[in-house]
Length: 125
Image (cartoon, rainbow, N blue to C red; front, side, top):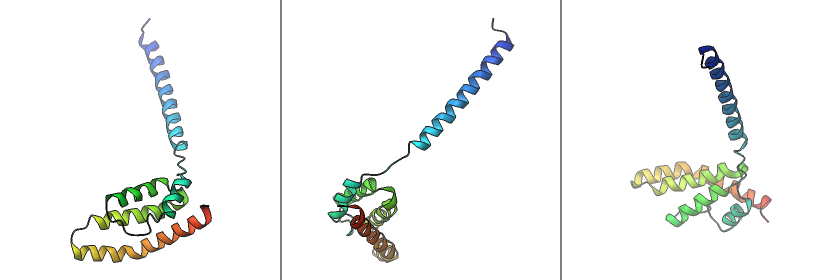
């Protein structure tokens, strides 16, 4: 009943089944990453000025996190740029490093803020 040939055939069947299951899981994971963001929440935060000024504390950083999480994919990069710039600047203690980093990021953040403004003008009611 448990001959090596029977077990070998059973193991091959199990391996094929596991391989098929793995392929299905990977396909579902790839198709399931359909994050569209939350346009209503993003618009509300952006229209309230979140991301348009430097973060001045934990509340501002939490709002930037919310803006980034709610951002639709086509504006998420700009929201991430603004959020990361504020996080990085807020964590710098050395004044010379703070000024160097702030001016290096200034142009990228200004462009990202303009992208957010333009996006809200076209997509938010």
